[in-house]
Amino acid sequence: AEFCASHPLCQSLSITFYNAILTLVEPSSRITIRDVAARAGVSVATVSKVINRRYGVAAGTSARVQAVIDDLGYEASLVAQSLRNHRTNVIGILVADLEPFSTELLKGAADAIRGSGFELVVYSAGGHTGDHVGWERRYLSRLSGTLIDGAVLVTPTVVDVNYGAPIVAIDPHTGQSGLPTIDSDNLRGGQIATEHLLELGHRRIAMLTGRPDLQSAQLREQGYRRAFAASGLVPEEDLILLGDYDATVSVQRARQLLTTPDPPTAVFAANDVSAIATIQAATELGRRVPGDLSVVGFDNIPESALCTPPLTTINQPIRHMGQQSIHLLLQLIRGETPAATHITLATNLVIRQSTRSR
Image 1 (cartoon, rainbow, N blue to C red):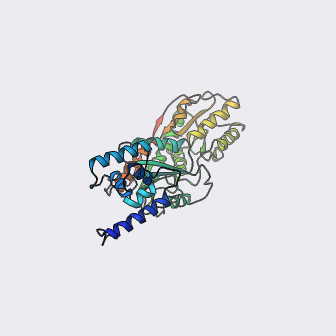
Image 2: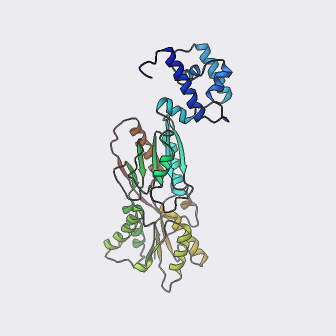
Image 3: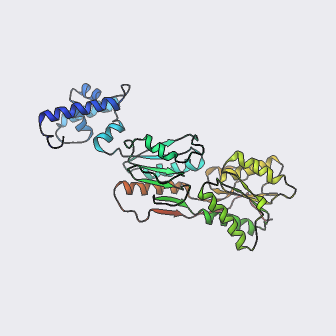
């Protein structure tokens, strides 16, 4: 087609083929490029030139076509745009579910993409991935290589994905790999959370751990144990229970801890959702926080400052992680060489009213 593109017959065949493709990718219920052409009294090829700002259309005709586009509210199909330009200027973010962590990430991604010339599409499984390893492969496959120019995978179960376009992973299950990665210093965060409780005089410090398949959760527990070791102490293994990053599970585990004959005086929960659930369980059992129980979380989601009492927590810059993932992905899409492809952001302690001296 490129060899004989100047021949009138080939031009006609190309337009016919293009129209056929449009028929397949543009459902009849939406305004199509053919509707614009008919209303403006021009050919589909002329409308295409106007949309793509190509030469060869008189100023008056171009203005008339643009007026019709505005009047009809026409937007080119992403698939059709991809077929024409091999680029959609759309970035995809794939998440297993829309929960506090991913929601904060999306806010950061939206901040970063503003003014870039790109748009953002969120693809969520709605929590239906279960324990299925490799869900991100299936969802990338569904996007068919035509809807997005690159993707951000949030806490992916695997990183050996082959999409044919740039990909950035946020907090992957298995940690850093060959894929460009954004995460936070989970090890240091777990350590400073536990150090804070030790400095307040607590010794029976329980931990509600995160999901065992996530490296972030493993590192937070390692930080907890490292803080004990640095103080010359040994944590009590029967005080370390699975919270699973889940509110329902954490409420049950917190009740289990607080109804033992010798309950802990403090709890470090591997995420804020589990920490808030711990406060809920303590309140239901008549335990005062922080009078009877000090609680520390991890993440610093907005809800942590709004619960009663406001939660002492480890701040991981979730929103900034979302921003950094987009900045890195855009560099890769544009063919630029990033200064770093594995970025670990610092964590820090935010002291509020859920902890006090023993």
